Length: 287
Image 1 (cartoon, rainbow, N blue to C red):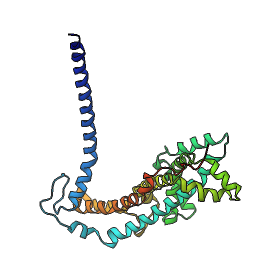
Image 2: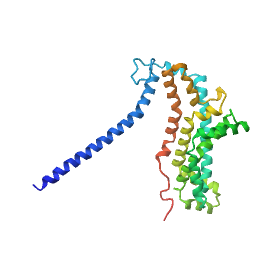
Image 3: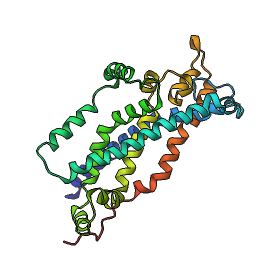
């Protein structure tokens, strides 16, 4: 008789816990479906000769949509422009972020925190709010409609958050390792290149992927700064699939989207090993 209250109180508690878990699983499934359905539409519509807005299995599979978009003026040239712009901007961002984060991480100053808060604040500024003065500046310095000018602006727009990320990763590398290198005659730049950056490989990989993805999907910046059609990246040329009066080639749009997503996926696959590993500091510093 003494066990009945425990059992009677335990069953509702167990059922309540189960119901909460089922509700959480259902919520996660809804969120997963919200992400999976657009991806399913892209894949299925790229193989459907009669693609529309609905997610449906194609009645017959075809590669005609890919044949229609895999042409130099439609896909290859814009993709090459995107690789030049985003690759150059990412390289410049990572290099400048490493050089800027190193003194912030290694040297203490009362200005470090205000500087970090300032650059973090700049990441919250909407890009549309600064495009008008940037456009006027680029006209004055003859950087409008140039690949190098767009690369510079790409790097400048991603640099504040890249510095913040790089500095946080760099804080995880013990300074004692650099001090040992300084004792052997290495300079600060040599210790940064040969010790700090190799040990914070996952951090560099995160900054690289983040910067490249943000540049790769940017439509507004190249649309404003580039005027020549031959210099337009794929993020802008995809607008050509939206015709007049609501006429859209959905199958070709989906096929182009698949090709357009391939470089980002390949970049992630290539450096995913760096993301999976931690900082190689085990046993490096003895207490």
